[in-house]
Image (cartoon, rainbow, N blue to C red):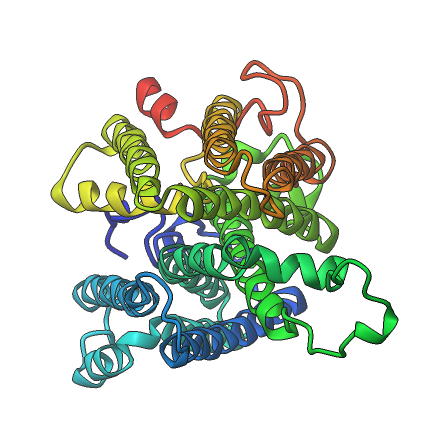
Length: 430
């Protein structure tokens, strides 16, 4: 199989690991846990489409039109288009490097189903997984397709559902504080008015308003968890010699058990929730000023990603575009597929996230001080609490549940092993 260049958006490229193992004794990749993952992905993907379409329909049917309602449409269409174009890039490389991938039917399928590109990779993953019993290489190809599926969903979810959730929080939470006050505390009766004045009115905040926000947040946490779990396994298939010091089989394979996966999901659920809260609070209180914060952080993330790419593989136009896209993803969560010295990367990323959250809380307090708004004091404290819950869950995961058995090593505390794959160090040794 021909060697492949590094992927344009992350360190993964489809099928890059097929040649990484020459032994037929590779552990099975398609197990009941992967079947469970695929079921979760299918349900969340289809429900995500339905929820976003319903949100757009509702926003355009309201008598009082929300500010910039057209953004709901933009953040629905554009990420699906970007994911589809990325999938076409994958297919183009596959068609030039592998037999049987250059047919007209394949191109027709990828173009016709461009808005649903993750489903194409999901079907391919299932096909390779089912064939693993006859050919062990198909099991590795199954894992390749799973990581590719994760990359495409990063595009759709973090560049689409993330901004949509910020808009929902701005309009349905911070912009409807009086409704939430009535929902939580009950209606305020006029002075001197007894029980006879009470009127049974419908609750101002219905189930659907809360459910769709929690669903989108859960979908984002599930997406990043899926990607991190799969890419870790792919890295260990590509560099098995770096993990021979690990004794337990699942640790060598990078497999996270169900408990570890749930802890990682909870960590991202709270952390992503804090990111959404911070941006939506500034958007509600300061309006367009939120774009200054988002733009500055996006530029910083893009530069950070570019530095990583330049140090490892050099700079090209495609990789520059990849850094721009991943800079947007990093606004909400760190993908951390580079390997290497993770501790320093984590400390820097979460320190910047905490500083940004503190700035968002300060701006909210400055704008809402003395307003009497129901969330005037509650919002900054809620933001800090949710952020710290996310950090606590991350610490529990890396201290207790990480498949690499984190320990004190030459690379720092809880760096996930002293022999962690580091592409920069590996090149320095050669």
